[in-house]
Amino acid sequence: MMNSLVLASVVLVQVAQAQGITPGRYAGVGGITLTVTPGRYSFVRQGRELIGGVLRVVTGDTLEFRDDAGAARCDNPGRYRLSTAGDTLRFAAVEDACAGRRNAFATSWVRVRDALVLSHATVLDMTGGPVRTGMTLVLRDGRIAALHRDGAEPIPDDATERNLNGGFVLPGLIDAHVHVATGPSAEDRRDRTEVRLKGALLGGVVAVRDMGGDARSLADLSRAVIAGDLAGPEIRYSAIMAGPGFFDDPRVLASSRGVAPGQAPWARAIIDSTDLRQVVAEAKGAGATAIKLYADVAPPLLARVAAEARRQGLGVWAHLALAPARPSDVVAGGVQVVSHALLAPWEVQPLPDWKQRAQVDLGIGPDNPAIRALFATMKTKGVIWDPTLFVYRADSAAADTSIAKRRAARAVDFIRAAHLAGVRIAAGTDGMGGDRGLPNIHEELALLVRAGLTPMEALIAATRTGAEALGMEASHGTIAVGKAADLLVLRADPLADIRNTRQIDFVLKRGKVVDK
Image 1 (cartoon, rainbow, N blue to C red):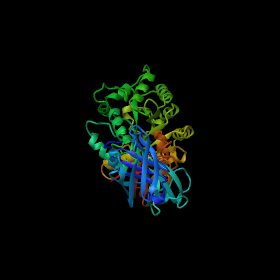
Image 2 (image 1 turned 120 degrees about the vertical axis):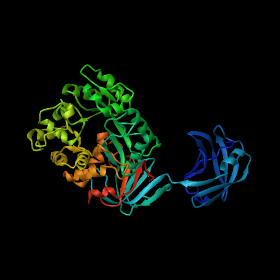
Image 3 (image 1 turned 90 degrees about the vertical axis):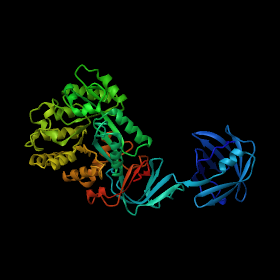
Image 4 (image 1 turned 45 degrees about the vertical axis):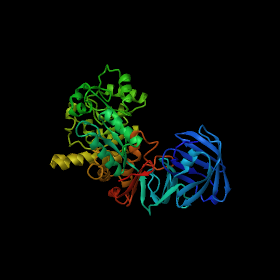
């Protein structure tokens, strides 16, 4: 029959309880699955049926297997005595002329509980609805399979239940501005990056938006995460497009090492005569899900790139000011997500060379009429702003100067005003962290609250709006049946104190608890 094949798993569904078999899945060793339904069984490996046949109860605990389908079927039936011990099944041959079948059954089967149930949970679904207490979530096949009141439905037979005792469940966090592969040959070596990604995931970050790096490395990291070879957040990344003057920047040289500056599909110099259809297609072929417009791009070219990117199904991301494009030019040009709070003053002050973009006039504040008009346009167009407050605070802590502190404070001022004006905010750090303690998204959340967002609004910035910024809103960002079971479970209420996002009980990726 199956020669020396050894059964790997057994699925026993709706089998007569008189035989002592609890419906469910049982694992042994190897790679074959046995599915049992009333009166029938089927052996399958890698999606191909090896054997199928009729199963009947002979007497008491004795079962008879009679093959009638499959390339490896045996003409002679076999009889086996079933014994159980807790979650373990054993089959002892009573009579079977087929050596392969005897070998296959000569092992123990331990029940595998495919589903995970989180009961007695407090759910923050990030849809804008009320907090729900006393809830049960059923997680199966990496998705949220059910969500209901405790006790409203029975716990599935194949589930492991985890009582959260009122613990808080929310969607996994999304860092909408990171750089994980700027220098894959140096500071972003694979071993270091893997540590950061694992630390970020353990800190509740389930997805990130990489804003410019080496697509060769990013594609490999992204694949490794999706394939389960690497524990880390899912990675959505951009291809940078900028004017030729940008491509002597040491960061872009590091991220396109081995390729002529400005010629890499993920780091492309563009001018008015560039074949945009071709370069956008090449960026898409490199795995980018968006084009990031960086610097030295005039408004007409900006708008053409944005239109072509959208035509090819890519997102459009940019710095808030590109010089010579002002913030209002960026917003009007079709950019969907803009970055950095302290670029707002370039709406008012004379535009410099793009390399002086950090030299903003801190005397220009959010009460300036041109800034207020900018915010109104951003609201109307639904543009998402990723302010990276963390990086301004980090700069002020490192420099410890009055200017650095004023810059950090002014960045908060702009976001407070933008939020009041109805601009949509995403949480991005410009420095993921995770290699030394918690990832920096938790500090970004606290800074957003300092900027006037409520804890709930800050959490929405790091979940629902972040998912939209990445183009992942169909699967992430909120808790709903059918969405990814990438969840963060907290021991304390983040709505009472946003710092409670650091009180992590555990993190779930594809419905599985991330191993610390």
